[in-house]
Amino acid sequence: MSKRTRIFIGILLIYAAGIAFLLYRVVSDLDPRYRESAEESLVETSQLMASLIEQDVQGGVIDTARLDPLFRTAYARRFSAQIFSVTKTRVELRAYVTDSAGLVLYDSLGQWKGADFSQWRDVRLALRGEYGARTTPDTQDEPLSSVMYVGAPIHWNGQVVGVVTLGKPVQSFGRFVSAAREKTLYVGLLSALGVLLLAVIVSVWLVRPFGIIADYVAYVRAQRSFSPARLGRRAWVAIGAAYDEMRDALAGRNYVADYVQTLTHELKSPLSAIRGAAELLQEPDMQAAQRQRFLDNITRETLRIQELVDRMMELTALESRRVLDRIEQLPLRPLLEEVASAAQDAGAGKQLHVVLDAPDDAAVEGDAFLLRRALGNLLDNAIAFAPSGTEVRISLELTARLAHIRVRDQGPGIPDYAQGKVFEKFYSLARPDTQKKSTGLGLAFAQEIASLHHGRVELANAPDGGALATLSLPRLPSS
Image (cartoon, rainbow, N blue to C red; front, side):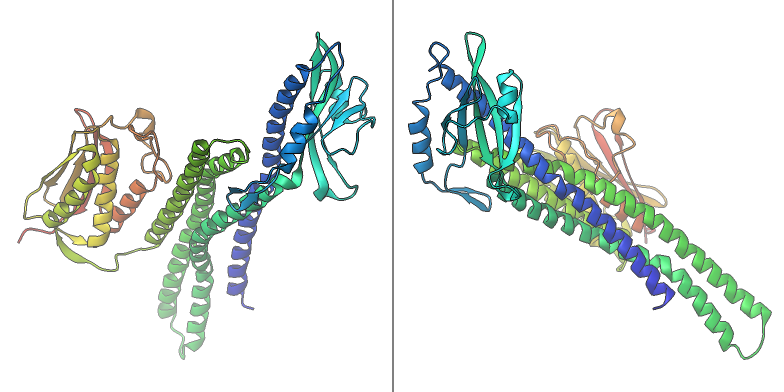
């Protein structure tokens, strides 16, 4: 195996190990979080049961007569609750009640009545008025049979006269943990594939200088006569090429690290929202309207992740290009009319009026598709921040060498703290009407397109209010 191949494989292995470690940490954190959520629900339910039982306490004696028909009826119920990919068909909650000595007065499963539970942590601490909980397997040495128990004290005249403990088999929410792991791995691997494309490019750039040196050695060996001048010129070219390739590779490695870190941070928020909604959907008595709202939240956050990944893949492909593949002469007036018409349709819901002010004799060289995308992103940004019923203006100002395309809205403008961040990847401000944020990649995308066209894009506050985006491109001289 050649040195070039070993370096290439080594970099890919390091990248794969980093992604694997990241996914491992995220996935391994799911189970504890679900357990915490389940325990929190058991705490509230146990306190509710304790309040119910306290109503039947007479003279310090606990009466559990109403509990047996309650749980017998609940266990006999059959239903079908489709929670994502898991179908729940029966009640698995269990309960037992002990007196002040820790002796079991009632057990919903009918197995432990009369047993001494005073040494179990949930009973022992609850009898002292403290929080008591434990997780114990039904069958020793079988972790899958574990049950999570939470106890709550039963009070009478200011004294603790007993404990009610509710239990939930770990396996009952373990299915949701498995489903969440699968979804997290799917999203994580999909995101990793996008970064992997960039990592492969960086890896190729990193090992290419070695190939350049090897090519030079082969060139020297192939020479029939010794010519210092010719060999020196060839060596200088090889060294310059190696330096350029190594510089680009090192910059690319830092870029990949920053990209992975930022992308991971951006994915945490929608993943947390999905996980939270999934936990709340486990509630058996949730109303249909609430359940639909949480399902809508999960759908919305999933689409947000998909949009983030898609835009990131597009931006990565754009950044890997050094030059435009296709260059043509583009009259600006028809191009601006096209994007203005699309913007008018997009702003119809807010009753926005898109105004175009551009001369007919301006032209640039470039890729029409990419320029439409860049202008579309600037207009989308203006429409998102423009108040309803206002005007978004597109104007074209010409100088001797540049064409300045300006997009102006009448919105709140850019806050001072965001002035230097608007072109950072994944940075986005909340929209005034919805308080939601975009992927934060639109302006970065426009900036890359401007760079490919040897131009620039700027975003600042207009002197008399609103935001002003300017795309400056080299113009063709008038004929």
